[in-house]
Amino acid sequence: MNNISLPQTLVCGYFDSNSMFRTVKTSPKRISKCFEIEYFLEDGQTTYLNSETLPIYADHILIAKSGDVRCSRLPFKTAFLKFSVEGELAIMLENCPEYFAVFHKKQILALMHEIIALNEREEKDPLMLGGKLLTLLSIIINDGKYEQRGQAVNRQLMYRAKKYIEDHFREHISTTDIAKSINLSESRFRALFRDVYGISPHKYLTDVRISTAKEMLWDTEIPLLEIAEKCGFGSQQYLTDTFKKSVGISPGKYRVRYAKKYTDEVDIL
Image (tube, rainbow, N blue to C red; front, top):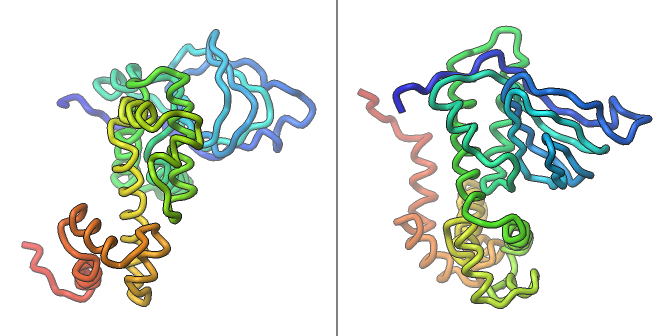
């Protein structure tokens, strides 16, 4: 990790094909001149990368390299980054899959928004912009490693399963329910999910619930019983036991500790 350099000549933004291509069905062919990363914001038609045809799905990343031939069937909406980079970071990006479903979609989308906003400023802060860009690329590269663990058909099934978890975690769902949603046996589903994402579906379900509970704990007006019900834990005791096992402290102590981060005076040196 001795040759990590910041990306250069960053161009980024949002693109809605409906605003530019109103009378054509396919965007013009073009050749990428640098790295291009696209985060598709909604389901679309298909995109073409060299000789490969790829379906456009929301929360999927496409990574194109210099020299790649590109075009897409319309419509599609995307957030994008274009930049040049050399050294070890370039090698990491070269080794990433060309197209994959992201695992940390909330973090990636939030960072994309921040980077685009920072890059639009007349007086840019290169340290802040560079730090957020490296963080984003690190998450994308690591999500790409999850992708490489599974075959294409398994990736699409597991993406559907992951989305089912994210849409239904507030309900009392089990791994059996998730497996049924994609027409797989529970044992096969558990094996494929771990193969693609590196963790069990139960662990991911718990992580989503814990993450949401943390956000609700930041609002000190919400009772623990209500948080437990809204996050799918079923009871306050189950929330407390699961939270403590995952985070290391109880929800109540977490709430107090979070509040003290603002109110306490801290010696920095």
